[in-house]
Length: 259
Image (cartoon, rainbow, N blue to C red):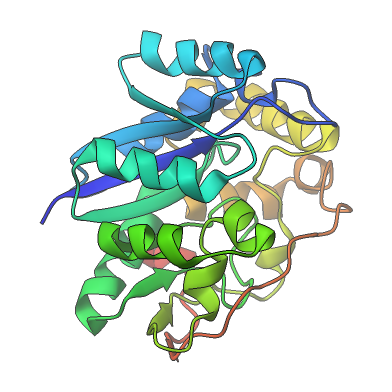
């Protein structure tokens, strides 16, 4: 079995222009995400799927200069861009991660991939329901399923969300890793708003370079211990809806179990 992590990346952002190039310590937010993905168990390749617009050239160069593979594709048809990256990777299985998640946890990602294989499902994720901190989301599926979605998805929403067709098609068996909840789902470890950048900067100021590899359990403990840090962005609501319903979801898991 070969496994590629495809990191979805684009420059366009109305709230933080070129947010993926914002520095977190000594490296960009994009590279912080990709570096973490490289340490996921059994991953063979980490590839950036970057929009093909001129303003995204810097994003592509950032990944390429760091030694990562890059595929360019349509800015708005993100499904086509991701499918092209999957073909370029040559991998049998894909783990999809968004580039504005600089604290993505390799152990949580590995659990999602393991769940996919243990249940023999078609698709596995960790956001049905939204019970993990925002910024740990990932999805695992066979590359062939992504190509099927590319051929059959016709709604603009499905093309833009990448897995909308997969998450709602009645034939596809979906499973979910359930997060701890208990308020931890209100934490924001993503990079979408200026307040999110303030949070990320505060974590790096507090932990230094150790922030580059801090586990989800350790970061949650820091957030609970330091409400002055976690409170920088927790007032921001999650705006993306939950798409689809899993056939099977695990019991809620403690973050310490994957630390």
